[in-house]
Amino acid sequence: MGTLSNISGREAAAAFIRAGWFSRGQVGSHLVLTKEGQRANLSVPQHKELSVGTLRALIRNAGMSVEDFLKLL
Image 1 (cartoon, rainbow, N blue to C red):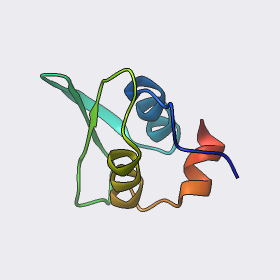
Image 2: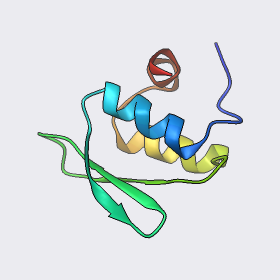
Image 3: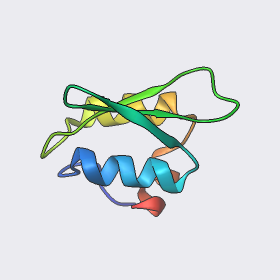
């Protein structure tokens, strides 16, 4: 299993897009992603490095496991 450290917002957004999420635009420094059939939107900060807690929360809100997310990177 890999690690969630040192992942940028751009890399995280690309992984979510590979998982079927679509970009709906940007609000400030956050990219907003939506997915058909999901009630929640993802707001991915476009920072150089995301904190592990923020990234875990995004993965959980996307309905994914950490292992599934790491495979998409």
